[in-house]
Amino acid sequence: MIQKLFIFSLFLYLSQVSAQNHWQAPDTAKQLKNPLDDTPAVIHQGQNIFKSLCQSCHGIDGTGNPIMVKSLNPPPANLTTKTVQQQTDGEIFWKITQGRGLMASYKNMLSDKERWAVVSYIRTLAQKPMTQISKKPDVPNAIDAFPFSQLINAKTTFIRQTKGFGFGIQHRFGATKFDKNMLQNFFGLDLAANMRFFFEIPINDRLMLETGRTRYGKFYDLGAKYLIFKQTSDNRKPVSIALYENIAIMTDNAPSYSDQATFDNGNKFEFKFYHRLYYDTQIIISRKFTSNFSAQIAGQLVWRNLTPYSVKPKEQSYVIAVPISMRYKLGLKSALDFEIMPNTQPHNMPLSVGYEIASSGNHVFQITLTNSDRILSQNLLFYPTIKYPKDGFMLGFNLVRYF
Ligand code: HEC
Image (cartoon, rainbow, N blue to C red; front, top):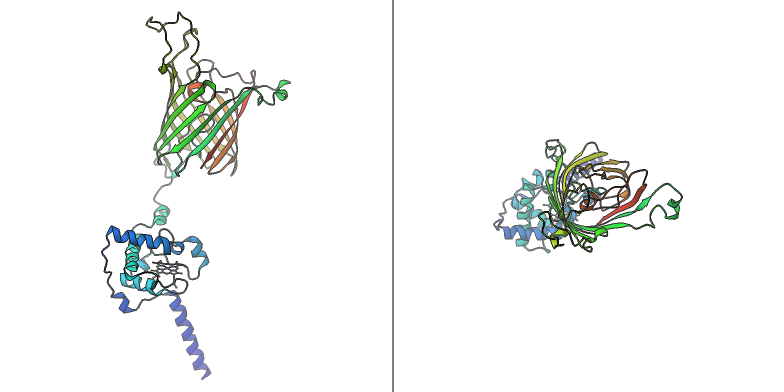
């Protein structure tokens, strides 16, 4: 008798365990037909219901909210799997109607029509499980060589993928040397300083706009960057390539010129609006070489409409430059930056180093050491750089924050 009881209770126990594992709808449920056509309107209605009632457990794409999957036992079912998708509409409908365990019955909360609409929506999840797409090993990842859209003065190929906008400040203090004045002028911080503040507005994952204002020359600038393609993890695209264009308007007082000044054709010189315009055109190529080391090179043409006429030899109205930038990650929160901009202008070789002391997805702070207090390329490449170490160096900082 006792033995029989034991076997009977063991049987009960086992049947319960298996009931826990397989949630079986009755045969009558299997035969139920979905009375709704899966029109966009029905799917949309189902999606709205799913978002408000189901997503918290089953996840945005039906694969299960990771937090709930960890904390609930049994976990919320992955609705994108074959086990679920091979069931008839009727079975799924029946389960939503009945509920089991932690999943409530939606019999009273949703009308029949509403439950059928959710069933139609669940069908669409099988076609597009987002997480499965991104986890597929044969889909190469796109790689950003630099985590921000500019390094010290140079633009990078980076375009931020998220919505929002960036705000930044680039600050360059006066030149200081290792001498007795260094402390007196506090490393140049007391001296006249140049500053540019700017906004970056990503339009989509390929296009970014920026606008800034610089103290020296009272420049207002408007730029656009377009990412042609991005480096991929399978190396089929070994580099990222972007185009960049910036137009700056000098709004400071017109430079003084003599009454005798003429245009090249001999006509009397007059300062016109277009003389205020400066252009910066670049093609930028970047590559992340290792998880710590990235570098980029650009071909750059900077053009100004007004060339100082009295300078001998006569100055050019353009500069061609080949900026090279490197970044070496020291740790999670710090990196060393280096930049050099060989170019066709005499007495000009911008050279900068930077130390990123706090960088995260949303902000970066760099302490910079430069040989020019100019920031915009339209200014930096025309204005002579100081001789290091004879003339000292300039301290500065860059600060960018995303909102
Ligand atoms: C509180 C969390 C929670 C919410 C909210 C929830 N579910 Fe579930 N769901 C679960 C859990 C847990 C299971 C597994 C139940 C089991 O096997 O005992 C499940 C199972 C299911 C199944 C059965 C899958 C299978 O294995 O056959 C379907 C279908 C389903 N849910 C649909 C929905 C829909 C539709 C909604 C919204 C109307 C919803 N769920 C809301 C937790 C939830």
